[in-house]
Length: 127
Image (cartoon, rainbow, N blue to C red; front, side):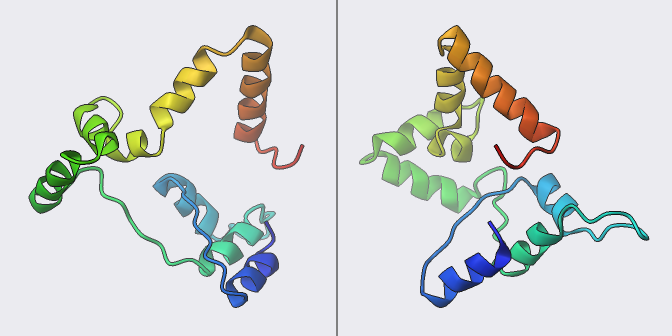
């Protein structure tokens, strides 16, 4: 999305939330070297608008105690706490469930999703 559109949304009082892996964030905020092309210029303008929150890989002891308390009344938190291989944040964001849906998709659906993922990895940003 163009940074100007996001500025308009913010001015209108719209709350916008996004996620980005740390390595992707670093790549997108870095200025290009010399006279090289700048494929991330818009991304950098967008990220300049952001309040960046860094999410640690693990809970502090106090956060863990609080999550355990909440897990008594929220089954989703209990499942996320008990899933050690994916991590709490990934489970709460349904990451393992999305991967399960993809891996069990019918052959043609899986092929289309895989092609879209591969296209995105090599830099395609539009259909």
